[in-house]
Length: 448
Image: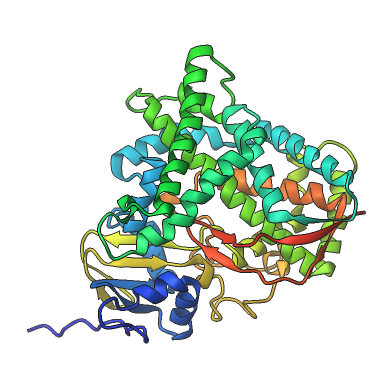
């Protein structure tokens, strides 16, 4: 008989019945850090009777995300529960349907559209700058402020609509869904989202609110027309280049909600953490501010100017390394496979964690230190499967360049006018669909 394949080392600390599920739920970032600290490229978990694997090996990550995406699919419980909100959007769909939707949506994110969207981003940011300038030397929750700004930009680029008046309404609905996501994914009972808990009722109200808002915008556009240049107009007018099919209203809602979530929640978090890190490192902030003032001057910000904010881009890249908004990627192999010499059975949970991989001591010197110089032009680029804040492979975020443009533009616009000071506080991270600061991030904002 052939020798039995070796097993991955088992993470310590599991319980008799639920295994590591409790630790994975209560402290998932600690669990990922513990797996990294073992020094093994792959470790095994027991998750209420199901095997799980945490992978910290670039070659294995490449196989999962790039080489074998049809084998490692998004059939995990997390993605199934995310469909409650996003339906069959680009984040959650699979197979030929996903490929068709991707082909339809892709033109909306090419460079000519980004150049047009730059004006929208700059106009919204200028409004925030004017508000802050009217209250000099204020203490600001930058997490909330960046959320409102990113929501406005998402609304205007997606729907050509100013949703700032509904920002709290939409934000509360989104928060009710995101806060419930982790518990319903991890509860060891069937269909936990349908149990009559108050938190579940709030979640379903939030889902209905978001569906109603987006459905109303789509219906209004169908009835009265509107600009063909915003994302909704581009999606409504686009057809699959191979089949000629267009999106139905249901598919439009799923994609619009996916882009609303990805286009404001993740960007807002990235901006908040970048401002926090700049406030904690005044020397880095001063260098980025000098660049912003030299490149942007006092005038309107255009696409070409943003491309010249090289050091500000490094700040963004380093902030995304330490605090990647999408902190965890989960996959499930539909057939048995081998990773790092270990056989991974079909139906197992496979976890790739950008948050911990971005702290891997074999690939990053002093990994906990904030140092934008890591991404300087004279430094070797990090391995694409060691640094991947937008995922990798064909499922890489379709809006990655949109998000990078938005973050760099906003940072430059803020730094040329304001200085940010750190206020001592405990920053508690909430690893749900995205990596959010639980209690916000308060900074002192001083006019330059």
